[in-house]
Every structure is written in C-alpha cells, then in structure tokens.
Image (tube, rainbow, N blue to C red; front, side, top):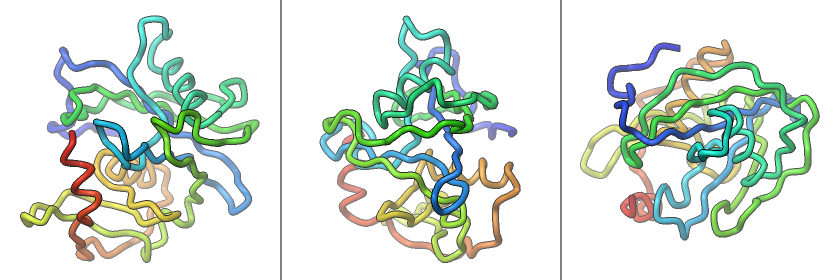
Length: 198
C-alpha cells in the first residue's frame, strides 16, 4: 500500500498501532471493529479498529496492537497469526503515527467490550456487508467538505480514518466492489457533536 503525502507522519508524532483482524465467522470472512465510548474526549463514539498508543513496555507496534485488542475486545493474542505490518499513517486529529497490523484470527475467542468507559461495542463485520454497494457512501461536513468514504454496517457509521483505511484494505485484498461514490450524505448531527470534542 502506498501512503498519500497527507498521511505521511511527521517524526515527532506519537506512536500507535491498530489491529486489522480478519476471521472466518458465521456469515463468512469478517473484520473486527469496535465502537469507542461516547464519553471519551478523543474520537468519541467512533467505530475503529482495536488499537491505541504504543507503551514503553510494548515490544513495538505488533505487541501494542495485540495488547489493545485483548484489552478492548477480549481477543486472545495466542489465537492470532500476525500477517504483516502496513506503512505508518498520520492521524492528524490526535497527532499519532499509526501502524496498522494485519492478523488472521486462527482461534477466535469470545469478544465483548473490555472497558465500558472506553469501548461501547465490538462486532465481527462480514466482508460481504462491508463491500455491499448498498452499505457504501461518502460523508460530507455540513460546510460542504467531503470527508471521504464511509460504511453503514451493524448500526455503525464507519467513517474518517477507519473508513479510509478499511477502504484501502478491501481494495488491496481484492474484495472491493463497484459502488456509487456520488452517494453523498452529511454527517449526522450527533456524530458531529461527538467529533467536535477532538
């Protein structure tokens, strides 16, 4: 995957990692997503891949991604085969350089929000639902600025950094299906209100 210039991280950005976890679920191949608690100060209420800041005791981004997936969603690290790490991406709203780590869920564990103050929901979202053109759209700020691709799945609006990264991953994996990028919707007011805390 190539990194667009506006996603290239500056060297002083804080290091973080997310886990893009693929599995074989009841409805076919899927990807694990979380929804952040609405009470958080940063990225409140937003769907995301499990992840967070790389702590000093972590042995790099892979260890951090696995630790965060365990803490946030109950993903047992021993059941995950790490496939690769993707190039770092800059998340400007929180000034982090994020390493996406791709993994295969060889032995799935029971999932549940690990900490209700941080995670509101966890879901295994089938790839078939993610690539269904009926679930794809482009989101726009009320000012008219297009904010990028989004997904409506499992009662979540997946947009922003996660929507962009998910779009890239689905394309790279060869799963993407043609969809109407001209289907544009304004971000709902409740989503805007939560995003304004960042």
